[in-house]
Length: 473
Image 1 (cartoon, helix red, strand yellow):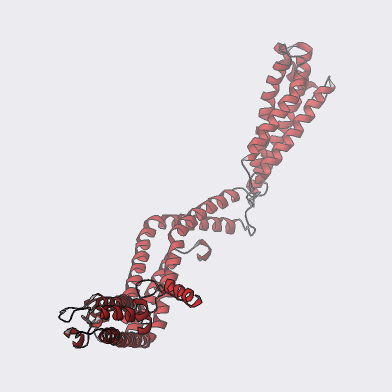
Image 2 (tube, rainbow, N blue to C red):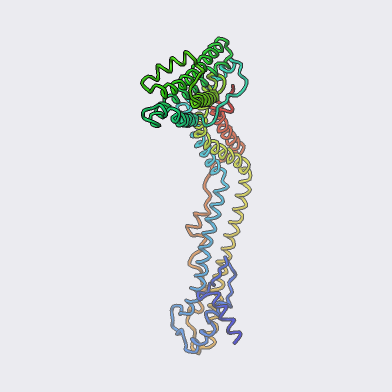
């Protein structure tokens, strides 16, 4: 019972076709196992007892056909494996073929050179004008610094445009505060007071900002005439701001005293007669708040740009030209750098590997020839196994029969219908293509020259269109 169980387990593993579920390439043929699987001994005894096949049978019987088909299926299975193995050997031989490798690397290098030359043409049209603009702006900035002896970097305040938001905020706040002061004498009350205050605040903040941005920064100029003009204009501007707020304070007093219709002329008279005499404490508040807001606006004007006049503008123009050139440079060169590095790396790897190819090819051919010899021996083993099994069946059949055995029992030994080694697919995969004699040193020198050509083409591009950080001053 136990033996029977193990036998069934072995049959399940091997399968019902006699080849086994777990295949091994050119595995030894176990004739005893095949005889047991096909029940050759039992079939021979049974058929011999029944005088089968008949003495005058001209062809093989079912058992003999089954023996041949079982071994032929094994042979066909391994023949397919042989062809697959030979294809793998052919692929490996192509991979270590010096002409194939040279052709592949030459194509790679030529493609890279074509891309580099294409970029050269594109750079002339796309990068050239930006490079010239950047160089022009950079030289202009250098000349400006040299002319005015500026050794420090330009100060480019961040968020410059938020200054205008602050100015409008100052105008709104001052207008709101001053509106309460002007509301007393306005016939429209608070609304009329805010309207008057907005006009004064607008003039105050914008004039003070312009005073700080232009004439006050002229005081930093190295030209003494410009300094003097800046000083004079600054003094006049500050006096004008003080006069504006003094007039606004007198105008508030006059509005409260005589009404809006006569307030303007009255304010001018009191301003000329006694500029520092105000009738109401709120007018002093109006005067002080106006000057405080003017101070804030002047401070924003002075710090809106570099202290030295026009230095910030030159710097920003140069920075914008540099950024434009850098972006276009990166667009053209970043991918090109990777392509160049990959090409040179593959060429260098080819230079190192190609001298080893003949030895590797010889080793592959040796393994392939060993496989062919092994399969030739396997085919002989298949024929031997078939003949052994046929003889086993026929001898047992003769032993159990009383009539003479068929004549084909004494036929010549069975042979395979053909050899896989003569198959067209095998011949194709083992054929060696005719290749002309190749000078290995010349081939390696050609690869080195291609590598140098790629590097030289790339370097010439970089020399002609360098990155801004690599440009000579």
